[in-house]
Length: 222
Ligand code: IPE
Ligand code: MG
Image 1 (tube, rainbow, N blue to C red):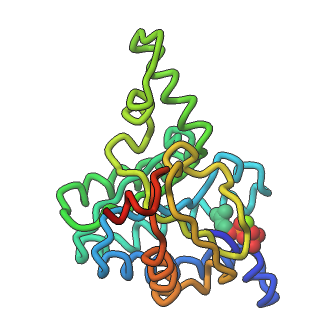
Image 2 (image 1 turned 180 degrees about the vertical axis):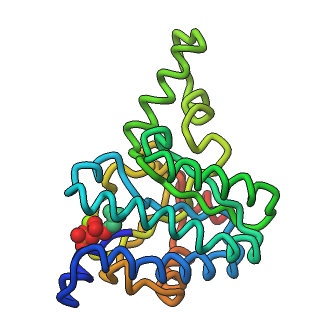
C-alpha cells in the first residue's frame, strides 16, 4: 500500500494525514474483495525496513494501527472477516500486539474472507525464520514444501495477484518466496485514492492473463 506520503504532499499536508486517509482505501478495498468472494487479502502495512522512518511517523503509524483495529472490529464481524497477522509481531509495541490478538481471537470463528495484515514483515525475515525453525526441528536437508510449511503463511495459499500502487515497480521485500508465480499489477493510483474500481481494474487485468506455471500455452489450454 504505497503512496500515502506523496498523497499528503500533493494536498500540502503532513505525511501522517496521508496514512490517516489510507484507512478509507483499506476499508473500500477490503469490502470490495470480500464482496467479490476473494478468500485471502494480504495488506503490506508495515515492513521491517519501515522502522527506519522518523520516530514520529512510526509512532503515528502504530497509533493508527491500534485505533483502526478498534474502530473496524464491528465491520469485520458484520462481514464475517477473519483477521490474521504475519510478520515479527513480537517486535510491535505491546498495545498493538494486544489489540491484534484480541481482534484475531474475536474474529477467529468467522468463515468469510481472511484479512491478513503484514506487520513488521519482510520476505527475507520470513525465509530466515522458516530456515531457523527447520534447524530447530533437526533438519539437515530441506525440501521446498518444508519451507512452505514453516513460513508465516503456512496456512495461507500463495497469492494469485499482487497489486502495487503509486507507480513503483518493485517487490520491496514482500512475500518473496510466495510470489514465485504471482501475477503482478502496477497502478499509478496513490494508496489513499485506491477504491473498489481500482481493485476491479486489477482483477480484470488478472483475468486476461494466461497462467502457465512454466508450461506451454497449448498445455494450459488442453
Ligand atoms: C505507504 O505509503 C505506507 C506505509 C509504508 C506504512 P508511504 O508512506 O510509503 O508513501 P510515499 O511512498 O512516501 O508516497
Ligand atoms: Mg512509499
